Length: 538
Image 1: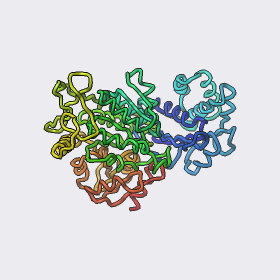
Image 2: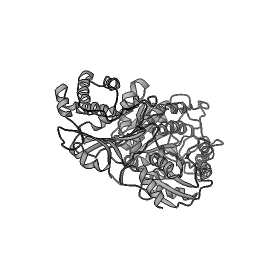
Image 3: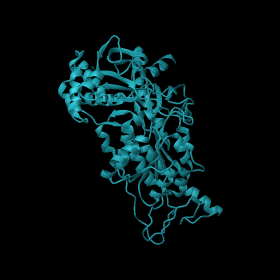
Image 4: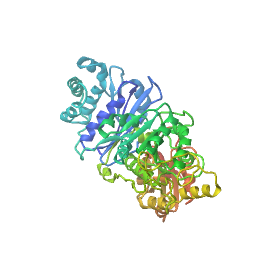
């Protein structure tokens, strides 16, 4: 099989997500490239959960409408997804009576282990269905808790059905990683020392992941009482010389907006991960959106520079978070990594070569003597950065100030500091232009312009429809030169993004006429077929 999709569904607590991850590990051993989209409601208990796993010989990070294998832990899964099934149905015959391949997974789980192991029974049955060798199944189960019991459950389910196909090895395994895990590792490679967050889906797993790593990487991970405390604590740590990052979603970032301005005027380095979900307000908390772009570009009062990076998959989340950490310390301006639920919580086969792109930028310690000027007006506006505890007196203030950090209301000094901070823009833009933060895929006189997670489906759709795809990975500063070069020879432009108002399209229209906006705002990611249909119908 070259490219296929597996949907695993059930009610919350039945283990659909765990089953999807186990199947991914099995298929990964055959060399398939994996992408898993997770779908679940904002409920403590109950509700329909499912994982949609795409396995392909090439890297494909979007979902298709067609399901090749439907694995149903309950009847509700069949009712909700059978219309999209064009292949095999594997179901729990203890709960469901219908046409397809039935396995009494609950009975098997209770017989050899515990009821909770029914997801292992489903794994065993699926492996036999697609022709997975039993030895590979054993390898995966050997890393699970209670491997003997789980293997007994899987083996009986494996023996209950006949194979419908025979998988063949198509490559080497890759690490399986979520977007949140990838960006966390990118930050660590850039010297992350402190992480502050208040839990807010879909950024919460960054907090959990880094907390698990804090001993190995000697970092501090803290959950303050709210998002205002989060950003202020992070700024305090950064003032003391600790590389700090915070994570949140749109509602939490709203509370941090004043802190963004504080970072700007005090020139305190800070990285903010803003993982978008559907709004406004609480919106649809566990579903996807790309509707915070204009918000993060303008949040905070006053005029100041910021960095806003928009990764479109796990590798870009790793690289751009690493870059944001380095650039915030280099330029002493706030840096925002704007991702979304689809990247944060989805699982990817991670390209190891991305690790070679990680860097650590080390700040200079020059100029930290008794006459230290924290806000020295240099040629490019970047002042020497020193920390409390040495010979230098290190001031930081939310008030306008002179070069030493002493507050001021003198008109000439106000203008001087405003201009000093904005002088950074020239070399910052030059560096952004050099970094290649506009990606292109394919060649055509018609182009899809996209950003964030929509890049994944747009890339596949562009390939099928014969359109060039242009991906924007930095909106502040905007890589104008590279963008104009990517548009050379393009006569028709469609913008693909996950919001109602066409937020990126408004920015793109500053540089080129937008002929078509393909927008999706129902909380779900694009199907590649949806984009193709819109392009062909235009």
